[in-house]
Image (cartoon, rainbow, N blue to C red):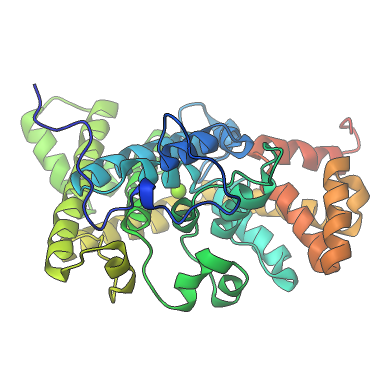
Length: 389
Ligand code: MG
């Protein structure tokens, strides 16, 4: 028996589907679902969501079947976010929808791909994956007769746009306003960022060990890991291998989630916020770790940056990834006729509107939509004479 109710009562400062700011294209209310549940369902049925299964963050997709992909990452983020939202009496459905959509705009090959594409787009407005996620749900998905994109609610779109430059914000209308007015997003969006971070730091530890790029011994220098290593080893002195790592990592996740819930609760209480409007004008974000946990989380991130992301094997992979993205961009931008016909059409339409920047955007959209393996295949079709076109 559990005393945890299935649905928590929404706090006064939680997003309420009944009071959503609505969709860009008005639609009748859903009959059996809330507006945010409908958002979630549209995301799950989108083409970009399906592609996440073949996109990666650190490890390239074909390296092994056991590593996280962006799809499994997004599911883990959504799970963590629901737990936090429930405990804080925030809107679980909205948190879930934001998390499932948060990586839809990611290029192939994780951050290496995004950085390379951003460099290619430097003279044409740049490329930023958060903005691209919004572009996917607002414009690029082609599922509905009446509108482009998925026509999600304002709250979900706002949550997807985690960061944004001032200049880009000026072009974005309602979801750009908070960057211009320097306001906070809703709490469901705030917690989605933390759920993302908790998920990827911890699964990078697990996947990094599995790949043999980092070791348990090295991680003993990281306080968050070593503390739970001691706890697990004391309780299960003979435990080793994968189970040891899993037992430690699940404790790390639990610790981070619990700390986030407790310190966010305290902050919400002491801030005196009573509505979403109060949350928006609060001087800082209200969801966050305690100072101690913030510090140990930073230590873990630093370790991963130095030992995993800068590992020579990861660097070799990212260097290949950057070259693939750069060369694909160069080829398609110089001759859009090399792209499949529907992308050529988009290129012509955008070029007519915005000149070379429009052409570049169509190329960036095409490349960003590629999965890791599709990008590798397209690259060899274009540059390897022995490959079929
Ligand atoms: Mg993520």
